[in-house]
Amino acid sequence: MDRKNTAKRQHYVPRLLLKRFADSKELIWVFDKWEKRVFKSSIKGVAAETYYYNFEVSGVEYSLEDKLTEYESKASKIIDSIVDNNSLSNLTEEDKYSLSEFISIQYLRTPYAFNQSLKLHDHLMGELLSRGISPEQVEGYQEPTEYSSRLWRMSLLSDFDLFTQNFFNKTWLLQASSAESQFWISDNPISFQSTTGDEGERGKIGLEVDGIEVYLPLTKDLTLVLWCGNRASYLCESFKSIEEDYEFRQLRPEQFESIENLYHCIKKGKVMASTKDNVTNVNSLQVKYSSRFIFSSSSDFSLAEEMIDSEPH
Image 1 (cartoon, rainbow, N blue to C red):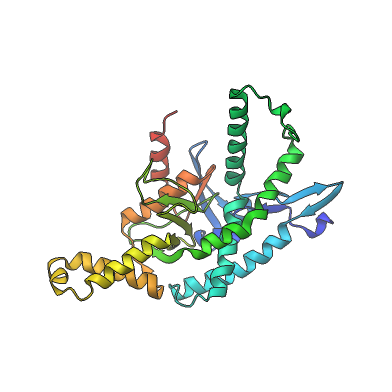
Image 2: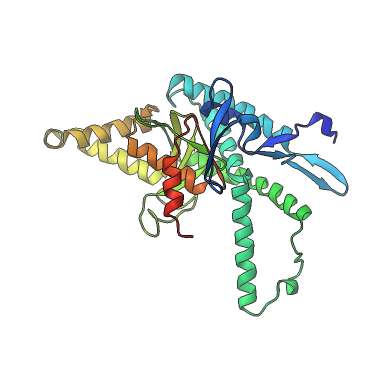
């Protein structure tokens, strides 16, 4: 592989997303969680590392950069269409699948995703040691090196087809920002939230867990929301049961209007209005799931600062 033909700075959050939160000069506000510092930067220099997708096998260097660019190019056109129409109504099944591929790749390629896999590895090693088993006793075990870690990180992307189908099967909605506040994006844009409330903060987290919600900010004004199909089905059935209930509509007009609007957002791809609290919730998830950096069109990161200050040290 000739490095002259490969970009040196390779993004794990692509410019096609970052530019939608930047100004006309492609400058974006950045909050550094580690140093609690706010600064402005070109999108060329953030969420990127030198030869991030390059790896070596048997002395030969390879790169995933060009292949990932193909998926990004398709996704960029689809996101442009969503933004231009302010709706999901023109999204074809082919578009939806292509965007699901992009979401899956985005989910797997960040430093956050790799660090999560490292935590799982460390947990398994800890379990072995607690049972009196040294990792060296496990057949095929090798102490991680910089070389093997890079291959490991690249291998995470081999599962993207499996995750693609999971994202594709969810119910898609488009959420707008509020008049008071706008969406952020981070160095790990795919975030999760559970609505079940079974365990922890609003419930268990996992892509196939019942009640899971997935969020991907597309622009400072729009976020793509993927709902668990069961929740969407329940809401649609609820609307049909009260649609002809004149008494309910008279006694609870605001509740009926809210359910009706959500129904049309699900069925017709209409944009879903947000309150300031809704936007705060989405932004808080970006802070929670980020590794280090949060990006915004504004220099106000007070929510992020408050969240970090409230964390136990």
